[in-house]
Each structure stands twice: as C-alpha cells, then as structure tokens.
Length: 179
Image: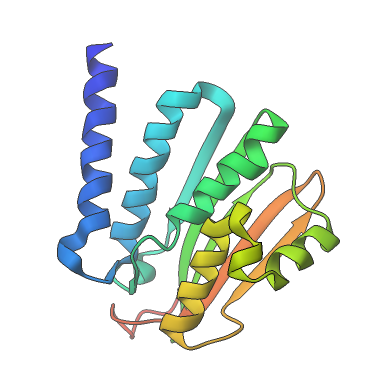
C-alpha cells in the first residue's frame, strides 16, 4: 500500500504543478497529456479496473502549445458520464499535427448520447447547463481563446460512446514536421 500511496501522491503533485503552470495560460501538448495521464492515474487508484486508457501523441504535436486544462475535463466526462454508467470501458486520447493544424481527440466507448440529448447539450446556455459545466466551459474557453466557432466536433451514439475532436491552428512546435 505504501507504493500505491506514493504513486498517487506523486501523480497528484504533478497534476497540480501542471494546473498551476506558474500562471501561464498555455502549456505544451506533452505537458497537457501528462497532466491528463496523472489525473487518470489517480482515478485508476479509485476505480481500479473500471476503465483502461490509451494515449498516442505524435512527435510533431508534442511541443505545440495549447490552453492548459483543455483535455482533463473531457477525460473526466468520459469517465463519469460515459464509462461509469456502463460499468466498464476505455478512454482514448490522441494528438496529431497535420501541417498548420493541431488535432486533439478524447474518446470513450461508454454509454454515448442520443442525437437529441447531444443537441440539447450543445445549444444550452451556461445558466441552463449546470449539469455539464465542465464540457460547456471547455467548449466556451476554446471558442473564446482560439476565436473559432467550429473548432470542436462531438460525435456520439447511444451504447457506442462519444468522441470529441478539437482542431485548432498549431501554435509553436516545429512547423516543418508534417504528420
């Protein structure tokens, strides 16, 4: 148990360090993914074998800059709204750089959502949408920071899971890398 306690304490410390990031709004994709990895390690200690997780971060995407705490609320939604109600499942997080664009994907194979529920979720205003503030707040942060209305695409089907794709202009990193 001491090793488990040490591991979760270490993950929690790393997670908080990234959250604070010396007051910076942006961090590298690699730092953001590491933050989500630490968050999910903590959740893994709590939930055991309830979920598994897969990460793929292309080398060309690692040094691109993104808003901090961009992926964590989405991974949290996967766990709490997709996988927990189903009783098992997986989370997949990927980052790819394609020319001047950065694509981040957070997906699960949880319970999914009906098209009607998804439309209600996306069209609701902040005051009416307190039950999904993490998702709504993240979508709003992306819209405001990147100045793009259609940077996020959400695909979901009941019983099959949910996939959230974020496509924004790549900032930083090596623009010569094409992936």
